[in-house]
Amino acid sequence: MSFKRCISFVLAMAVLGSIVMVAPAKAAQTKANKKVLAGCVISGATAAAAKADEGVSAEDTVVTIEDDDVPMASAEKLLADQKKADEKEAKKEKEIAEEIRKSEKNYKKALRYLAAIIYCEAGGQCYAGRLAVGAVVMNRVESDGYPNTIHGVLWQPYQFGPIRQGKMARELKYYDKGLYKYPERKGSLKAAKDILAGIYTVKYNGKVIDLKKYTNFNGHLSNAKIRISGHDFA
Image (cartoon, rainbow, N blue to C red; front, side):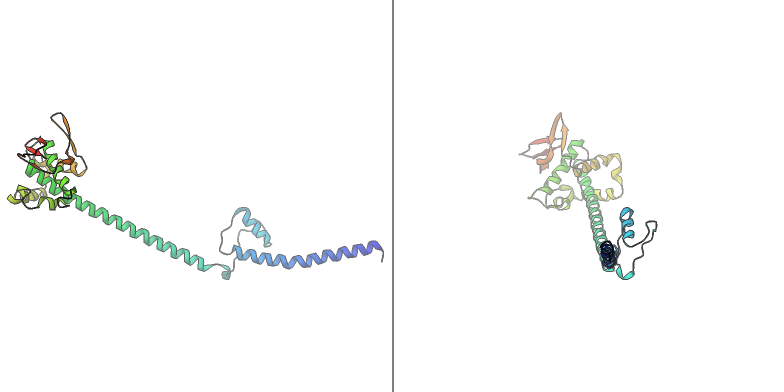
């Protein structure tokens, strides 16, 4: 055999050997790719490359995945986690709704008491006088020296005459009948709403007065700091 023929024979055997070695490796890689792609969403160039690795034409649009290759455990965990998140969110929304309901109920109760006591004590006075009476009630609620609710402050023994005299009970009935929508009592309702909205300053006789510091009022007080309409305040 000539030298050239020997060289050709050796080269042919080498090429054949590389083909034999590459084919199994290619098959193993293709199988591994299918495992990696199982249960995943692929698109665009990635899909085309993945199909090419498996010997599938780029024009094909369907990737067939065996059921055994799909990671069902991961899907079930995702669904379980989503369910827990939804339940947590629903619980939170329910709690918020309940807090809003309680706040609205407490506000309506506070407005009812304040409007009635303001009318009882200062119904015939100017706006500043009515607002000042409401401020005293709320200042007591916020003070450590008095009960911490409007009802507690108003019904504290020997503090508000209209409570003892029965006038307050009568006004609460009038409030429930809707009489505070009419001019005679509407000003007391407005003063109550303003106090609950946090308005504690009022202009009276050309002066701006901060009502936040007063916790007592009466027709005449020996320690009065200011007089508004028919009451002294301290």
